[in-house]
Image (cartoon, rainbow, N blue to C red; front, side, top):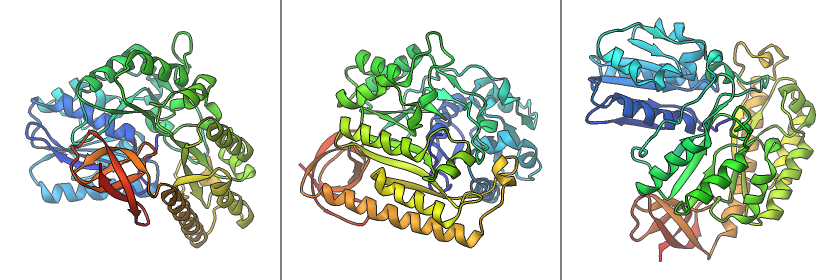
Length: 433
């Protein structure tokens, strides 16, 4: 699953001079799709509009989207408010009933330029949301750049064929479908020609890439092709992967290709085998540990992040301890901790629930464990020099996605060398060399 923000506040709130304001929640795929919409809306006459690109991964994400819609109406009383994204796809009527909302677009409709032309021309069906399960293809939308961002995201896949019992996202994204490799290469080449040094491949379930394409190319095959055909690309990064689907070609790249970044975010979700089974995950804790050991053996400097849910239904203290131990057993550095939140319509919502106080306490313990792991990672990088992609003046990230605050010159989007001399609890500190 494409990784959302740990807190579902908007990833960006932007207002273009020749287009609407965007409020983007959730995952990197949503960020990419907001760029597609930004291109579609330039010059069509929707300048006085707010487009809210929602997330549905948790109840809290939906609540905050509604809160943002109400705030947008108060702050821009004369603007047209257009709501889209996963929450709008799953439950369009509830958003259409909000007095503040002028139009609701589905996840497929938001990527069609004609949707915004119709809105601009007054053809205002309040709800335009189709059956997402009927969508069988995903187009490669050519995005020339990412507004205000140092790295670019490229969609290679959308949807998910798996039905984890806690997850509502397949009903917002549909079944898995892949962007043909040639279109991915074309887009990345254009981004590199526009000056991007780092590209992130994103989707809902990117390790399922290619199963629906002729010849069934794998994610590893795609990455190999990208790196071979675009030698000017300095950094290729993957968003969240399902480690059980990692293919041999991807493992070869981990071992051999320096331009594939040594940072993998894993969709683990739990560390107890019974909970994993009740989640309908396809891996065991032993599978997760074995993958991390293999990847680290191939690439000794590899670091891992992971999504872990605290308090999944039926989770006992002993089961939770297995998840807690997984942080050390997989040597995880970055934790995205999600207190379990029942999503109506999912099988897990009908299972015996864990007490809310226990969920909150377990999430706190996981985050504490994650903070300790991050601190240990930062300690290892003391007194080294690191290649840093500058995100904004004085701020950037290493190849391992470790945040760095630095003194000295550095232009956004450029790679610089930073001598690391200190740290806080969460970031490295140093000076540009």
